[in-house]
Length: 251
Image 1 (cartoon, rainbow, N blue to C red):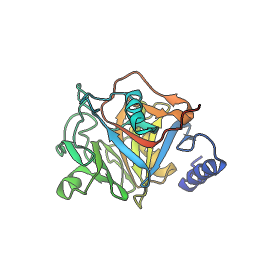
Image 2 (tube, rainbow, N blue to C red):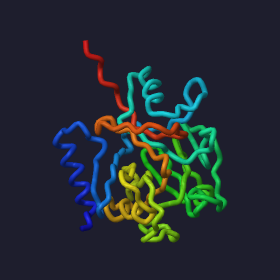
Image 3 (cartoon, rainbow, N blue to C red):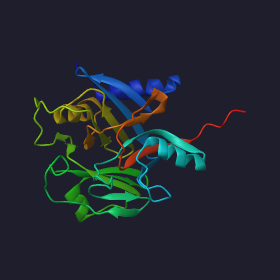
């Protein structure tokens, strides 16, 4: 049975009002598959992380939390943010704190990243945007943080044209979707293997998001401490996370 976007929003609102510990992330069942969705709003402190103060790749949620502790901060949730090379440097455009670390790639190529159209997730001042890469290259917005990945999952409310509904290529995948008003970004990880069509369907038909971008698969990881979850194993490249104040130490 299809669950509407309004039903999802109502469930999340009820959870928040109830004051449960897991306020940022919500597990959801849809079409017989399991997903976890974590929401950020433009008023949140949402950041990209790649290199620490020592210019070494963070690689893990634990390393980022250790660095944030110096600010009396912590990660409320986080996940891998885009594809990366063997040295864990980003594939395609990557901007952190306004500094461009790697350039945008607009050419078609092998693998999921090169399955055009791909796109860029951008954190602007007061707005989230998710833009097809070639359109971004022609008129780039002022991004504080940005990461390119691909393929796009949902483009102006339509599925990527190359997705096959019955494809047997199923993996644990993660991605991000943006609301029509640019005020919400929803980060999703599949808890059970899904194909591209099934993953895109969750963003479009269940969450009601008109734009969504695939971040990665197989290496997908989620850090959601309030759900008692912090995936480990593979060292990661770029990571995106919501930063909050750390709880004061008990005496």
